[in-house]
Amino acid sequence: MPSLIFDIETSGREWESFDQKQQEYLLKFSHTEEERENAKEQLALHAVTAEIVCIGMLNPDTNKGVVYYRADKPAEEFTANDILYSAGNEREILEKFWANIKNYRQFITFNGRSFDCPFLLIRSAILAVRATKNLMPYRYGTGEHVDLLEQLTFYGAVRKFNLDFYCKAFGIESPKSHGLNGHDVPKYFRAGKTLEIAKYCAGDLQATKELYERWQKHIAF
Image (cartoon, rainbow, N blue to C red; front, side, top):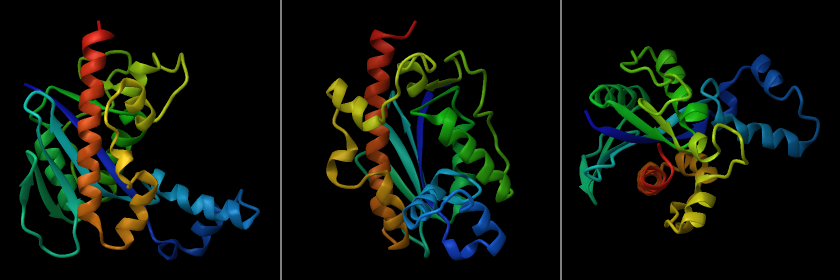
């Protein structure tokens, strides 16, 4: 069974979707307007205050993959640069993800253990979608999960950098160099530009693949 790279993009829920008690809780430690705005921006980082905008999956051996992305209305599937783009609501794209990933022996992420994996599991539980694979296996082994951030920091022994920084350090083209970055995702999502987010996610998959190949060739044992 082959390996699979995956990555997600998320957006915080609309502020008005939280009731008064929730809003008070979220702003408990925010005392200035700047702190309050920052707290709202952080909503995208937590599965209970955010939603999944897209899920990208790439087979590093074939360089073929799929990005499941959000759409308010039905959209035709299409393929570009060996990536299939398939639209649906959040529940539908989660169902497609779980149906796909069960066919793979090993998965590869960048910061997946701290972000993507728990986020996918919690959003799935909230939306009553059954997980088909344990995304949080034994931490100190790479047989099932290669989290490149953990590998490149040797499980926290050295400083962490973001994917963009690692790409530039290793001479890999960074998807962040083309305008859109993770901080822009909520703005694009609210504007209905989900296909642009999906294409950005595909760039992250390719960058992660190239970083994985460097790790596998020069560092992995």
